[in-house]
Structures are given as structure tokens and as C-alpha cells.
Length: 179
Image 1 (cartoon, one colour):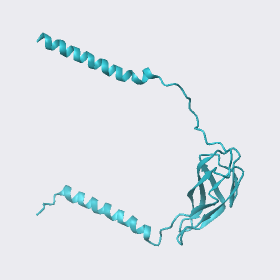
Image 2 (cartoon, one colour):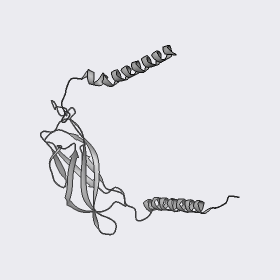
Image 3 (cartoon, helix red, strand yellow):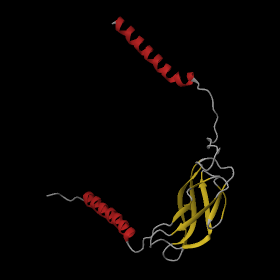
Image 4 (cartoon, helix red, strand yellow):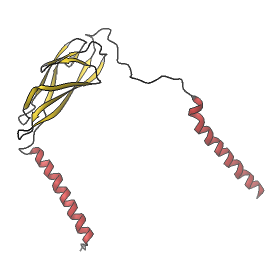
């Protein structure tokens, strides 16, 4: 039989509380108070500069929160520079955009289940370029300076290590010859 000392009882109690809290959060996701986030859909999902792209922020599933105020939607992209202007239904691809992949994010006000509005972020991918955009330059890396490689700076630690090994080997060899 296992002897239940006070530290063991405390540890077992803490583990039981942690398991209970973890399972409660799992059941809350499947319960009636759980909601799913809205989604953003682009039409089309690729484009060229100056093209107008329609977007819809959809309530995904029957438990999605209701959108409170579509006019307060904020549309952004990563990397920056994809969107030149937007309204509640579409955005325009900027003139100075380069070819590549972008992430479009919409921040929209939704009801939180008890009537309080809160901000929800939803994202999707968008590609600039392709066959419909001839001569569109690819994105360049941002910032930095290109310099030639300094081989002495790269090899200096290895040269120091080799020198240290040579000195230690020489001292050991001299000590052995004296003995």
C-alpha cells in the first residue's frame, strides 16, 4: 500500500485541479457558448496592380459571431503596400506593388455572444503576379548592405584554436622530454 504523505496529497490535488481545468476548456469549445471566427474570402485570390479585388467577410458556420459594423473594418496586408484603397466590399491593388505572396488581414467588429462588440482578425493569402501581369518585378529584399566576405574575420577563431593546440602540444612535449 502506498503511504500518502502531505507533499504527495498536495501534488495529486494540484494535478486533479489542472486536469479539471483542462477538460473544462475542452468542453467549453464544444458547448453552447463557443463561437467560431468569421472568415475572409477574396475574389479572385490573385491579381495585378490597379485591379479591384472583392472580399467577403463570412460567418463561418451557424455559431459565428454576428458582424456588428462592417464600415469599421480595417484591411491591411503583410508585407505592406498591397492595398491602395478599400471599402466594405473591395480593395484596389496598389500601383507600386511587386510580384509575390501577401497576407490580407481584416479586423472586424463582431458581437461576443453576450452583445458586447469586440475586434476579430481574419486573414487569407493573396498572390500578385502570374501570367496576367507581364513584366511585373519580383520583390527585392528590404534594407541591408552587400559587402565582400572578410575571410580573416571568419577564420580568426579557428586560427586561434590551432595556435592554442600547438602551444599546449609543445609544452606537453617539452615536459615529457625533461622527465
